[in-house]
Image (tube, rainbow, N blue to C red; front, side, top):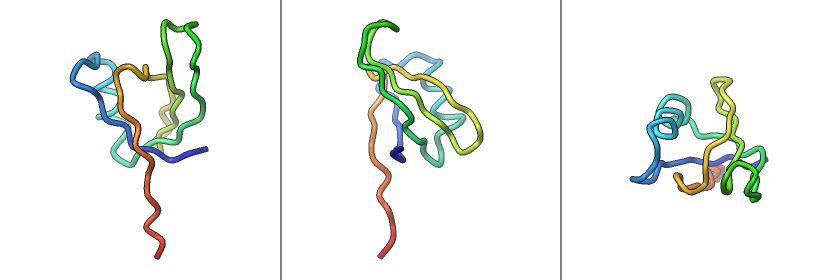
Length: 71
């Protein structure tokens, strides 16, 4: 599973912006990506360090990998 930072796009819904603001300060673990149209487009399943997990629509977010600071 990949560690990522998520940012809402300007057109993101209030739900998406709230989830990212409330649970994403330390980033998320990307559990799964659903490229199908079952939910009406592509979605990602995320885990937050505070225990929250849920789906966010890819059309409303940007995903950036967390860079390891090991030197």
